[in-house]
Image (cartoon, rainbow, N blue to C red; front, side):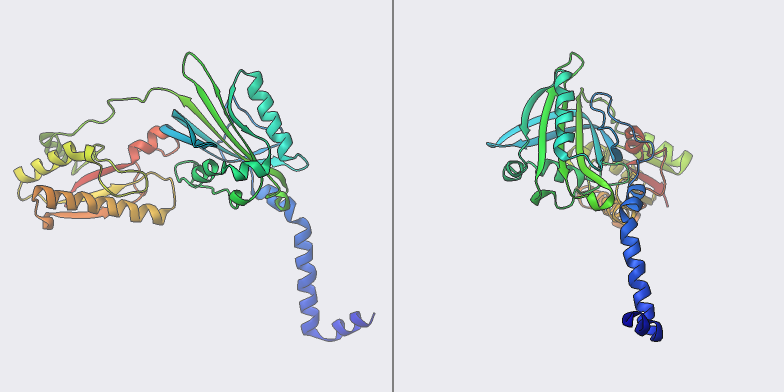
Length: 336
C-alpha cells in the first residue's frame, strides 16, 4: 500500500512504473509475436525427397543451378557433390526436441534408401568434430537463400546434431546434409532450427557462354546504344577478372581499336542476391576492373572508358529463379 501511495503521488515514479509494467507485458507475449514474425518464406516449398518436420516453418530457402559442394568430416575426410544445390532453413515447432526432429529425418531418409556417409547424434561430439562448419559456411553465403544470407548465429559453440546421406539414382545421386540445433529459438516461440542442404547431381549445362565478336558489338551499339556481355567472369562477391574472360576482352578491345572515336560506359550489373549497398560497390568494382584491363592490357585510352556500377537496379528479367539471376549478372557496353 505504501508503494502504491508513493507512486501515485510522484509523477516521474508513476511514469517509470507504467513503462516497467508495459515492458513486462510485452515480454509475456514475445513468443507469440515472434512466431508470426518469423513466418513461412513467400513462394517457398519443400524438397520432394526430404520434406519437413510436421509443424515446422520454412523461413528461408534458395537454390543455385550448379555448384560444387565439399563437406568436411572427421579424420580429415571430405565428401563432395556437385549439381543443383537447394538450401532450406526451418524453424521447428515448440515442444519438439532437436533429437526428435533429427531422428525423424534420419528415419525418413533411411526408408527411402539413402546411405549415411556420416551421422553424429551426440551434440558435444558434433561440436568437437567441427561439423558446424558446413552450415555456418552456407548460411553465410549470399547465394544460398532468396534475399541473401541467413547466418546460424552461435552455432559453433552450441550442441547440435548432424548427418550426411546419399541416395544413388540412375538419373543422378541426391546428397542431403542436415544440421539440427535446439534451444536457440525457444524464446521466439519455436523448439529448434535446422538447415537442410540437398544436392542433386547433374551435368552442368555447357555452351552457355558465347563470345560477342567485335563486328557484332559494333552493330549492337549502333542499333541499340548498348550490348550485354556474359563472357566476363568473376568469382562470387569478388571483382578480380578470371582468365577465361580474355576472349571477350580481346573482342571489346578490337572494337575500340577499330573505332578510335568511340567512347563507352562500362556498366556492371548484379542479381538481387545480397544487400543493395554491397551490390552497388561490387558492380562498381567489377566495371572498374574491366576498364582497367582494357587500358592496361590492350592500351585503350582510359579517357574513353567510364566505369559505372548499378547493382540490381536494371534487371533484364525477373530474379525469381536461377536462370533469371544468371541473365541479370552481366557487364554492358553503353555508348556515351
